[in-house]
Amino acid sequence: MRLPTFFLSHGGGPWPYMDGDFRQAHAQLEASLQALPASLPETPRAILMVSAHWEEDAYTVMSAPRPGMLYDYGGFPPHTYEVVYPAPGNPELAQQVQAMIAAAGLPNASHATRGFDHGAFCTLQPMYPQADIPVVQLSLRHGLDPAEHLALGRALAPLRDDGVLILGSGFSFHNLRLMFNGAGREPSIAFDAWLQQALPSPEGRAQRLQAWAQAPAARLAHAREEHLLPLMVAAGAAEGEPASCTYHQTDYLGGLTASSFRFG
Image (cartoon, rainbow, N blue to C red; front, side, top):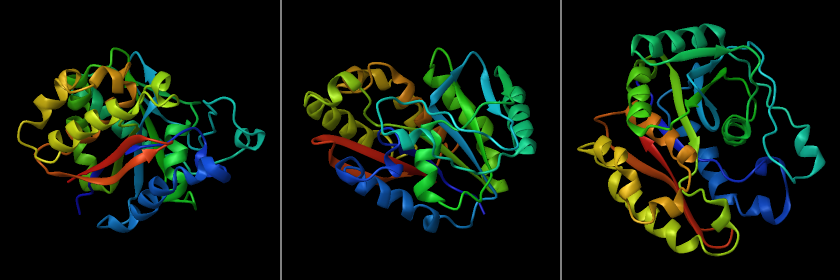
């Protein structure tokens, strides 16, 4: 059965491994991630994770059979630098993904020692806490060209018929300068409203996404677009199929609007 694809807003830092107010701020996101596996037509045989926290000169595939951890955040409690998400890798899938990217004429590489970054393990922990599904991470490419990342998604689309769940982990609003001072509220509302209009219908969606920077408050929502580019991969892998919103919060961290989307 063909699996859907997802663009997930992944939240802040290592939130699934924390308690208190910061964890509570992610309660709606956590509930949406916990509900995701039951919404699938079958249990995936593997997950292909495209995280906003990894960029390379070429699209690079994690090939380790037992990936480690990459604590790419700062200022959090000491125990969050010791957490482990022990999902196995899948070198065979990594090789297949690299071959598909090469066949599409896109630059590609593999990385034998890269570990899971928090864009990956902080979305996977609520979804699959047993960490029993193999996970392969795939990088973005420097330059952050939306058309090319849509093309990457198209190249990877056949994986959906082979039991591979394609997840794009980023954030619908990501401007750290505005996130914690209240100035992000209105831009996050405006840009999210555009996403809600632009994504559901597949008709013309690729063109809308390529021109995302012309959307209302686009450059306030994404001063740098690395957290939006996983959306392009998820949408490209489900071109021609409708999308729906799976998570929508209007008071994230005290006033931001954030969303996640399912394609197919």
